[in-house]
Length: 298
Image (cartoon, rainbow, N blue to C red; front, side):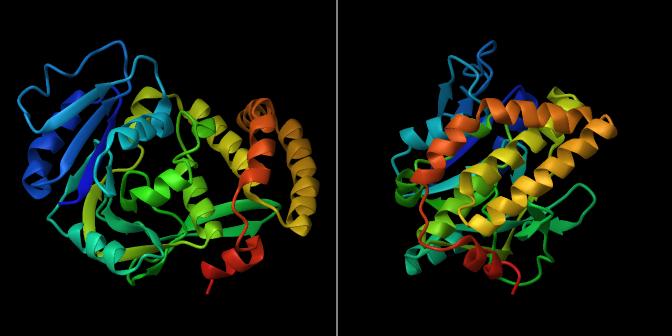
């Protein structure tokens, strides 16, 4: 198939090997690239048993965005199946996404339904504006249609468009909001992202991150990246003014309540503000923020 599978991995070799053995029968004919983001430990010997898999090992830790970008740069096929090492394919239904992308050239990506640990199904999401920030939440995943973003751990992407948008923004490393950011830029460029509930995978979200990072740090990074996403992507003046006012209120509240994680996230975001500011002017703006946000609330 004309698909390159990119599997980023970080200190999760046991799960990676287990899922590779399970998933490979469904990936026949695909180019498969595993990118190891843990420079202190090689996984090449572990993957020698899989002759069809190419292994790339980062010399320095690049985080999720940088690791995926590394794999995509080495990919030789026209479509990219992004597959986290903790994702289990249940069948070959991802090929439905391949058909969709070939038939509709306005599509940037097709995202999948995902079965969580508790058996619930997720994967369809919306972005909305509230209290001066871009927020996101899950939507009932029972019908096909526009999706706010293609989740970086389980989706099929048009490589040409991925490259055109310069891939994931590594400013968001080590994790969170990079897939939302890329998808938002794709939407603003005039492309679309579709959710296909007929494609179901098993994906237990955040199990890997929570095993390697403390809860407080995860929360601070999430706050930081939400701020960076807003500063980088919002171009409507009324929303920017509202953001400034609400941010002041939020900072005062965080100080009063000793919300250390938000304050840490804000300080870290300020350090990367120059990057976000420069990228703000380079971002595609074919669609306005107001027009785009209506797409997910209709």
